[in-house]
Amino acid sequence: MTEIVTNDLPAPTTAYDVENAVLERYKAGAREAQPALCCPTEYEGGYLEGLPQEIIEKDYGCGDPTRYVKAGETVVDLGSGAGKNCYIIAQKVGSQGQVIGVDFNDEMLRLAKKYQDEIASKLGYNNVHFVKGKIQDLALNLDEVQRWLEKHPVTSIEGIGALEAECARLRVESPLISDNSVDVVISNCVLNLVRSQDKQQLFQEIYRVLKRGGRAVISDIVCDEDPTPAILNDPELWSGCIAGAFREDEFLEMFEQAGFYGIEILSRQEEPWQVIDGIEFRSLTVRAFKGKDGPCLERNQAVIYKGPWKQVLDDDGHTYERGQRMAVCDKTYKILTDANGPYHRDLVPVESYQNIPLEEAQAFDCQRTGIRHPQETKGLDYRVTVTNEGAACCAPESCC
Image (cartoon, rainbow, N blue to C red; front, side, top):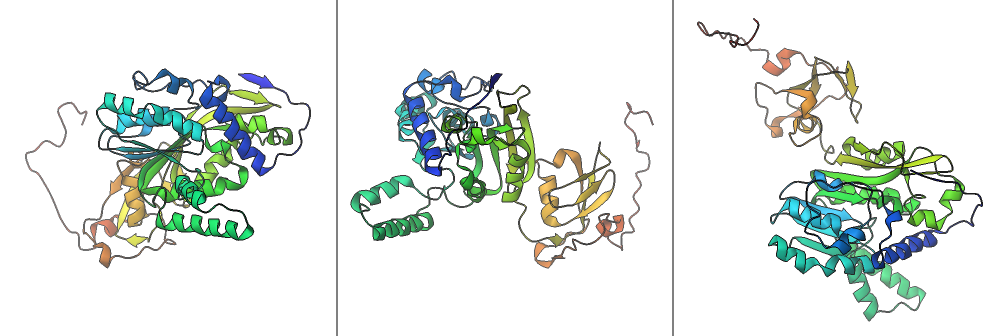
């Protein structure tokens, strides 16, 4: 843990200064390793063993979001830097998966691409693609913008308007990353580098590119209190992953406001990485899922919360009582019982005995009482009596 006390209040930092300070420091980090830019991190498995040492030394992070991806998935790495996380994920998703690294820094992109053919040869496949873009604007391909600027240099106010129109066209007609196209979005200590006024758009962009049921797994630096004005106005602390850190509780709220569900802290650094002006800064890894939007349809389904809490409350205000059959709509039922989702281990699914086709399902009454009577699930005409004479009802090892 490092403790720093700031004394003088620097001059206010403009939005341009923030972005430029980050860009220049990470350019330097591509030329020469800067250990102060990252927290010590242990990565799962032996995925670093085949990677060039230069990539390992010049890639900066604070957690390991790579451990939460699966074979065959399409993954986007926001702020991919030297490419270490991308090349780890390339091994995990395999030849049927894809990895897209997004970065704004030309020197980092050159470093990441430098060993691409060598690593692909070792793996036996090339499933990694690096692109230039801002992580808060994943629709805009900056290489395409650069090519347009070379043909149409901007030298007037009218030229600025033409550039803006071209950027708008590219976002729609040729997006860098399309809507609903990605299984997983990861990031390793990069979201805090985005200036404050762009952070809401950043979370909206993460949500936009994910498929329904997709997930974000983000490792970043958070703080336990709001940063002081001295911290916020220090360009060195912006580029050092400090000034732009999210307050811990607000970090999770950003996911919620963007529409995510199943928001969960996967890991939290016990001891702070740094303490500045009495404020603790530490690494946090969060996972969140996309897909709770859509109509609520009644198909007579229920779920039973196993416990141990007496009751729990979900992101949409639904209360689940321990041991009770709680009525849910079809959309919520699928979210809660999805084997790849965050909830299924805590709930018992109770499917309707009579299948109600989606096209015949009525709107679910969200104002109704939460508990569903068993006859709703079984049907009012349910009069089945089942006996199994001669069969033991208990296994030999049971106590009944």
